[in-house]
Image 1 (tube, helix red, strand yellow):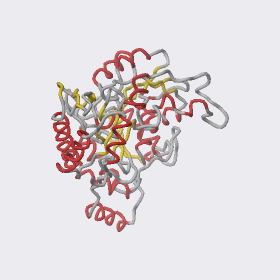
Image 2: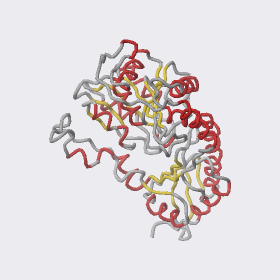
Image 3: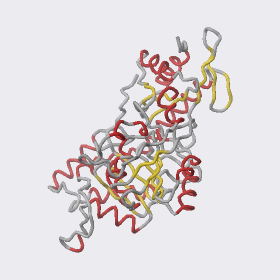
Length: 395
């Protein structure tokens, strides 16, 4: 298989770095590269504001700051995500409330979210998992009905297309993007937030620069951290951004090829197929829906619980596949029994995340992911499909 990292780094990024280094200005407060990146991302997404910052996690922290929870307020999110989604909630002394997911794609189930909205709920934080569009229209309706902020974590979802039009990140009050090493495009680490709301943008920009309104002189009007993106990060990210449409288009082309190849292996309708086994049994596989998908990873769902066995089978064939994505869903993470700050468990005294049976089943036995990138070819698709066809089933 092709090297799973993908990466499209080359002469363009080197030239961009050279320009910044020769300028002598590496700090984005006085440089021009980070502001240029913000303008370009804002234009790409049709957003009034884009705020560059040091990482995807920093972007999520800025989004929680924009939602302005009081200590002890709750933010509803998904248990199948990177911890960078949840850490900013705790950093603002808020409580993460985990809602269960749609078993077909691992994205938030709006009905599960609705059941958890209470008097302390301040926001909903949705993740477009693996690049698949979450049911963001339904979640926005919920947020609007209850006066909540809707945050979209698009770390894995550059150029994911929403059913009603527009990109993931533009349906909520704030969208967040990541430039971490393994995302569609990268500058090693980096992030951005996007919003059309002037006040939310002001809060996020202030927090990212130590609460410092630079126009007012050396005066700090609010709490903030140093989440500034450097000019070096911005230079690489700007060069990468030009390559983004091609990166996503290539991933989409081969992902659709694999869906069609897998569909041809067995019986079924729509996204559900049944693969015949030598012993006469069948293995059920739920294929991902391609609509709008940006394919950070290629997921398969095996309702019969074969994901660990199929992942091992594919791995033995040299295919970068693994079961579950996480060791455990975040509602079962060890930290919920441990102190958060020093010896204190605030704001989690007496807190225990509720069970999320669909998420727990996905991570434990039904979800399989294949690393995906823009350098895969039709030959790689054939290798994967052939290996799936040769899966003997559970022993």
